Image: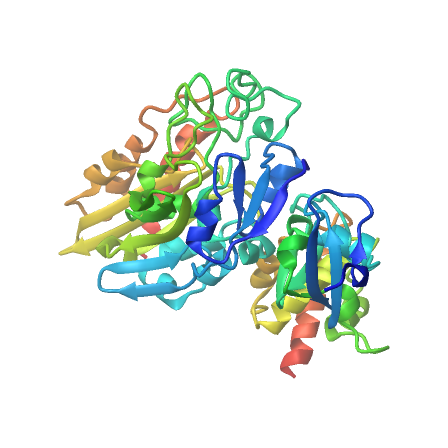
Length: 169
Length: 323
C-alpha cells in the first residue's frame, strides 16, 4: 500500500499501517500504535457517534462491534484492529431508515442527555441479535457494561424488549 | 501512554522469541491497555498474540482443555463447560461486563492485575508497583482489600473470579518460553506478596500461557460459584466462593472449596474441605466446617466484615448444591 493512500499521522513514533473495514468501507491509516480504536474512529475517520466517557473500559460509552461482537473501543489498540470489521452507531441505519433498536430507543424514550446512547444501542443491537434478551434480568445483566448517569435504565430495558419483540414478531 | 513498538506474532515460537521483561503480550487488552494509559505499565514493545492458534475447548476422558486465547464469553456459554464444570461457567458470567467478557482472553484473565486503587494511581506509593515505596492501603482505604495471605508490604486482593474456580478444581496452565514448555498447577502460579509483592507469579520473563487444563473431578459436576458484591453486576467480589461436592450414600465423598475477593491470591480452603468429608451436606455440618474459612485472617480497619462474610459465602454456596 503506498503511504500516500493512507491517512497518515504527521506526528507519532513507531508508526504502523492499519487496514480495517469500518461500516462496510475499507479504511487505511498510518498511526502511532498508542492510538486507540476510539480515537482512530473519532479523530481520524470523523465518526464522532462513538463517545469517549471514562476512557478506561468502565462506562461503555465507546462500545462498537468488532467482527460483529460488542467491544470497548477505548481499550482496543487500533493497530490490533487491523484486518477486523468494525461497526459504529453510524453504520446501523439503512439510509433514512433507523435500525429497529434505534427506533425502539426513540419510541420508549430510552435516553435523556444521550451521551451514553450510542454505546447503549451497540450493546442492545448485539443482545437482540444473539437472542439473549430472554428476561428483564438477562437484559439488565447484558446491558450492565453501559452506564447511564441520567438513570434511563427502566426505559432502556423497555426499548430492548420492544426491539426484541419486533425481531420475534 | 509511553511510546512502544508494535508487532504481531503468528506463531508461539515467534511470540516468545521476542518476549522479554521489557515487552508485553497483547490479547484482549482489557488490563494491558488500561494500565498503559495509567502509566502503571510502560512496556517498550507490545506483541499482539491474537493471531496465534491458541483457541478451542476440548473435553475428553482426562478432562477439559481451554486454549489461552479463547474469550471469556465463549467459554462461559460452552455447553461442555456449563455441563461438566458449572462453577467455572458461573465464575466467568459473574465477571466484568459483557463487552469485557467478549474481549478478554482466558490467559489474560489469569494474569490481570489487582484493582487496588493505590496500585492504579501512580501519584501514590505502592510496593507492588514501585518496590520499597510503601503501602498506603494498610492505613488508608482498605474496605475491598484482603484479609488472607497479606503481608506488611501488600494487602491487595487478587481480582479474578475465574482463577478461584480453576484453583478449586486443580487446574494447570501450560506455558511456553524460550526454554520450552511446562505445565504448572495454577495454585502455584500465584505468589504470596511477602517481602516482594512486585513479583506476582512464577512465570519467567517472556513466558506465555498457551492453555488451561482441568482434570476430571467428580465434585466439579455438582459445583457452583457464588459472588457477593456491592452491585448485582459489573463489580469485583467482596467475597466469593467456588464449591463442588460429590455425594455417595448421603455423605460427602469429595469436596472442593476456594474463595476469592478476600485474599492476595485465589485461596483454597483445605481445612474446610477436611471438615466436610464423610459428613452429610446439611446446614449444621456446613456451618461448622465453614468456621475454618477465615482461619488466619488479619482484618484491617475497613474490611473486618469480610471475616464473617467469607464464612457465610461458603455456607450459602455449599448449601446451594443440595437444592
